[in-house]
Length: 326
Ligand code: DGY
Image 1 (cartoon, rainbow, N blue to C red):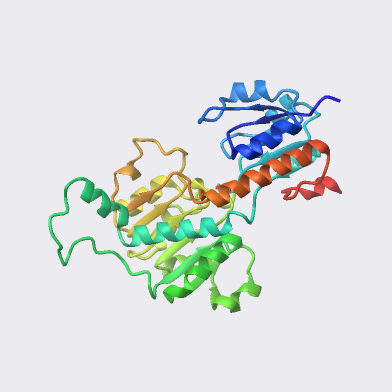
Image 2 (tube, rainbow, N blue to C red; image 1 turned 90 degrees about the vertical axis):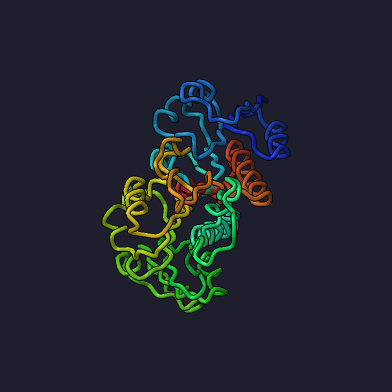
């Protein structure tokens, strides 16, 4: 019997490529950059499954082009805003993602950004490389204390909660906002549920952990930044478009807020002429929050298993749209 045909849109950990290659007729896109749209469409015509990344747009055109035999879309990420889930569900196609395994690693990275922005780590390190460390000076590189500050978390999902847990050692007051209040979690960390405006007005650190959807697109706009404290720092390890980048630039440039730590940008990659890159008080890293050896291996394992289960018609181990099974 012919093996199922699959397309894997980027290298993942080699042992999982080997596993997929053993069980399927696999085509692997070998380049560092995503396949261009026309190539993606050409390569996925007639496939039974795809292992994709957040840089691959999986929309109705993709699904029409792939054909009715498409049995599974396996994404190697927890977020799936690049995939039209409604359309996949309508067609009975299960969509897999990689939740849980990246929660701790992403929470760690959120803290790295928070500390780096608060204590001007990247800015002062750049100064050394530019030959500007001339002396110890009482007034140089003054930042903001994290210890004892107020942390505002927007989005109290798995990652938001782990970010909150890490703040206990810093003796922080924790405020949070989510469309769903999480009373079950509040007592453990003495977290206070507040509305978004209160959170913005009272927090020294605001960290974003929401999905990207119509209601969160550009949620942080001029009006939102105007509500924040002038010493406040914003951190985004969710999705770039949750922040309006021009509004962020104005807020940082005009000292309406003190700093930003961004794992994600809009667009990605950030354009080299983006004015945010000119600002010393904006720490930017290239969407690496889940990038630890252990986590990316586990993400590879789940994505490969979901792909293989899907092409065999077996349930995915982590499925975004389990209603396709009912
Ligand atoms: C995700 O999983 O959605 C992250 O953005 C990449 O790990």
